[in-house]
Length: 390
Image (cartoon, rainbow, N blue to C red; front, side):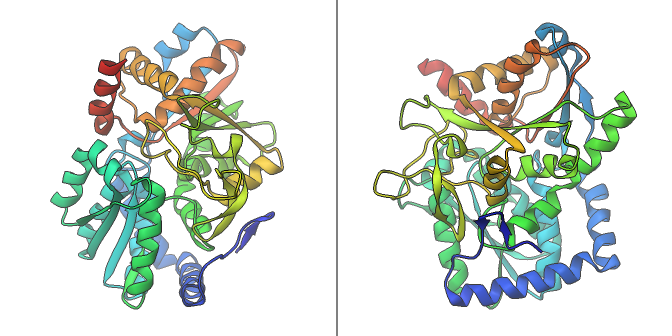
């Protein structure tokens, strides 16, 4: 298992955590090589999550834009409404195998928190979720959902009171409870082996998509597009296609109020190499090398780092990373809702927004797959507020 992705990744954590991480790596490798574990995981993906998720041809959007054919990988149709459940089911089965009785997790938009609470309820495990106070305020529905599922939701009031601070706090609490508690990390970030574990449980997205597009179009797509905060839904779509050099891949970050302002979360566009949350990756920093506050209308993209594999894929020029503003994302949110009858998560709307720019520039025989990583029920209140202010 790779501890590094080129110069990115690694384990920048205290020694007591290194021991636990090494034990986690051993347990993970044993689990994925155990046919009974994989059979159980696949059972829950099919019967509980509802996989495979459809690859849907967005015919009206395609015709309106007048360019490439657009397909949506419908992760929004998974149980709990996002791709996060693929990973939480896998990690909770791993926690159970390791004899852990409790799970803790961080969440931004709340989808990972809901998926963790759901999986914990499924397997009868005690669960606590840490969420920044600002994210709790803008995702009140998801907070209530987590509580309904039996999880304790703890507010994090430090720093910017958003996702980065929730991760900091969750890691600190994990160190205190490391003997009986499993830290269920939600994105392809953190110290090794977490980025690889999350990728493994999310790569089902691309494994399905590559088969589905070949069945429907008898060829590979020309482009893959996915939003990137930490980067789990994007790495989930990209992984299976990486060997196919003819398939172009685009990750879409949050430009917030503009790349010419400080109110953005465009880590790969404007960040520098640095260490955050136990990994060496790209980070938004100030001139003194301190981690800067970041901003996005999307709680799920509001993160000052990024998964180390994304930093590597940018470094080797295998994946291109672009940035979309709040305004463009909200416009795409409304356009997909009205054109296809699908209300996308505001995170996914960043990928849709870039697709709306790209598709008309391409010939009609070109094919784009967009990862629709989640549904937008959770964002309706935020969008309404944004439009009222605008």
